[in-house]
Image (tube, rainbow, N blue to C red; front, side):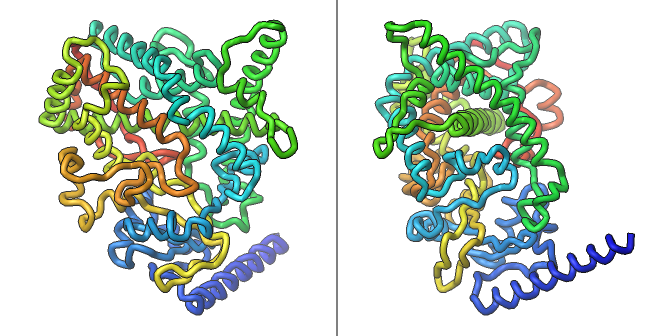
Length: 501
């Protein structure tokens, strides 16, 4: 007991000394302004459950580029379009590294994942190249247009069935399943979940993926005080390891099945999917393909990133439209004018649906899927606006704060899609007022697929149905509270009543 007390005291003294030395060094280095941190925990205790809101309020006081201490980690927060441009464009090379969460060390995921590998890595370049060229390139997306149409029509058919029954539609959950089946059909040529899961055993893959996204998004003390990461005090690394073990086993089984099927079909030319592309990939430098662990990490990332983002955006958009009936009416009027007597909305129609596009942009502004994007890290000490960003500092771009900044947007808390009919702003990474997918070399490579799916799902749901809130929700009011995990989602999942038109 005495030895434990002695070791604990020594540990606290060491950490406190390092903190004081860091504080003095920070003053000498001329870090950006920010709130005064406490010993050891820094500004961690003031973050709360919705740190994007807390840091936006702090930025109003300390400025658009701010230094805070999250535990023992120096963190730089950019909270304006110009500050975001400094980080993501002007100093893109210096800040293109990733701050690696503790949970990604499971199965060395951080050394195989496109999301976490350094931009200088040959593996990152190979993964980015194959995804950009074979999965997300415009001509590849055009080839898979009929597949997206099929999945959205399955969604519409299921909502029609629920409408006949008078059953509320769980918008986010159905959007998640639709996005998951689109990805699984593209990667494996098979669906992994069913839309109507009321009378069957829940999809192991779908539920596990949802649990993994939730667990990875939990605040982890190991990320704020790396000195104690080896202790895994919250047990999150162990939980993530268990979930990855199950997820990888399911993906590995699909890989092995496809290899066996192709071997059995010797001489035939089966229809190619994205897994075929990955299995056949050979690096032009050394003629080597991707390691099995790289395949598992990449496919896990594609499912994780490609499901929550689209489904959460459709859910937020529907919630905002239900609270703003005039916007809902205008969107449906536009659909009537453009689609006319056609039964289905097609992707080729989206370009003419200007108000629908404005609704999606306004939803991205108010409810960005990832309020901080993925965290960057400074790979070398860099001067930004006269301040020093030290090597190794974690960097967050608070795109939620930018979207709610009254200096950038008039009436920023109000849902007004019309603002995007008057202002030429897009989310393709060039306009720093609206950055749901980031910008620069670390911009989300799947943004074009996400945009197509969100527009097509939302347009189809609005075109085929009238929508209202359940009576008990109308009486109490719709809960627009947020829950921040991997993505920003509704704290209370949206349920709405659909009526076919």
